Length: 190
Image 1 (cartoon, rainbow, N blue to C red):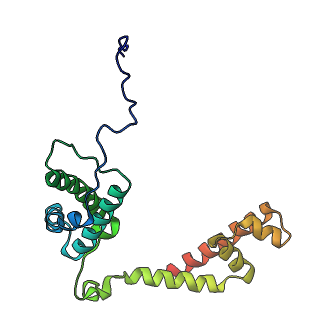
Image 2 (spheres, rainbow, N blue to C red; image 1 turned 60 degrees about the horizontal axis):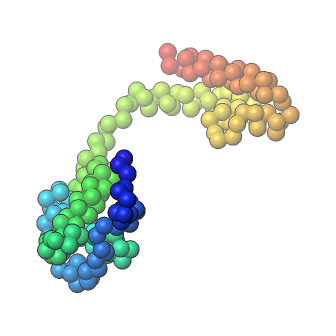
Image 3 (cartoon, rainbow, N blue to C red; image 1 turned 180 degrees about the vertical axis):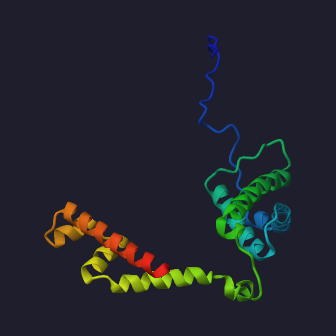
């Protein structure tokens, strides 16, 4: 970093803007709607989302102007500078919009149920699930309760405290319940 010469004016701090803030009117922004729409089309925004995104771009630009963040080069033509600045805002907003998961994975169709195959569920998987539910129904109430607690949001330790058991005892009983369920499922599936 070089030192300032004696008698030279101090350099402006980096945080001060080098260009003055300019405040174009709202009418000037709205007059550029066609340009913004063309940029949205060029960015690949679907037709169903263009009008909404156009309004988002206009609102974002107006808020930036109101907060003093629009600082064009004073040597550039005012309308050209505004168009360039709006192009940047449009490009960023379109990128954010197209990057959203709901936009990337959305497939609009007239009949969504026509895409679903009714026979897509494996019948063998259904039979195994039904056998597991039947085996679960045959277990004792104590084993079913422990398996329900293990599958639910409540912890096994909280269940043990509520029933006056040690956590080790509850874990041992859960292992017994799981092995009993596995044995019944194995007998049913063969």
